[in-house]
Image (cartoon, rainbow, N blue to C red; front, side, top):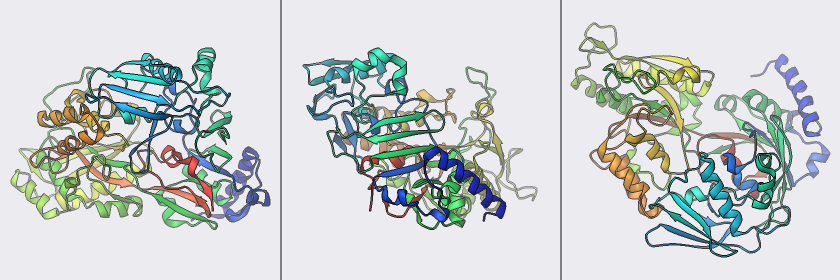
Length: 540
């Protein structure tokens, strides 16, 4: 609960926010008369103000707001046409031909042409951004309204990649260059009306949009990185919707607002080093391996022995669901990944593997090695800390495994993550993340994908077949077998290199009457997934 001092701070912050937004402060979530009349506007307390809006320099999140994409995905993750009036894919999945719709125009009035599409993709490939176009051999014109992509080999997720790339106007970008991201010109449902770096950005509906023009004519995104600030902003009525934390949501209510709870694949789990400590090091000299977590009995015991439902209650006040993979509920998820909590079975695995409490101190040992290890998390992340603490308590009480929870700066995690378990968070709308997480080609590199050094030739084969399939539909059986084929896999039933724990709910304080439409399962990060369908929002 908030004290009188914090209520005073609320009023001060509300006054500041009123200056930023040009609004009138109203207590207890009420709207001013002007705000009550503005049923075509919405103000969002946001946690992720971008530095620029340039798709050719890596801006992807929220790109479909300002820019068109060739295709998009609907709430069920089906591919739907956007800028493309039609498309065909060759039988060998090496040639993708798109016909561009004739009614799409950039906000400067110029028609969107196939040449803009080719310019966009060829520039991204040359810029080597995070967008994976490594298999794109060429993107060429076949007339004013047709563009042809040629791949070196099939890539099942290519259409999902196309769904994330905003198309820019060549005639504008070739003049403005790197300044384009500060004053972008697109053909999407919104246009950027104002951008105050680090503070806010404002979108306005694109009245010339070829699709249904958004009901929200003006959308204000306020930079609010701190959860307490966002809560105070909602309490003072200065935002219509904003992110919440599980802790605040569990003990507070805001008159005039409701708690919006969105399902996600935003999962947390423990990356478990897979090899013994034999003195090996990465190319940069970081130690590899852990003599405790490299034992599959330890990993399986944690997988089966941790009560995920209790973890959801303890760490996130019930605003989470148990996680069993990196993609629970997505079309390519294998439901056989689900396991039931069984502490007795977990203890039996440890007994059979020789992990026993021989000295009576409550902690198991084997060959002179204690079942003990640190569990690292990003310092300052209260949710990951709460998850880690709950895991540590259950592991000691139920399994006789001692875990020391330790918050570590991100710069200090890199030297330790190949030899010590850590809490990581994932969750994507693209199954390629499974390839990045578990393919042996990514093992032990200086990124966050496979620090546990997981290597499994059978899994590699499934992942290779999944990624090189001719379509998402054709790839699904291989993604699923990589998780569990009845004998081996990445899941908790298999090698358990990653102990998946929870999918956290994405929580928002939303003003009563705000309709955010039907949304996709949210990916990792609770800011941009919320507004992916902003063009469908309305006031009821």
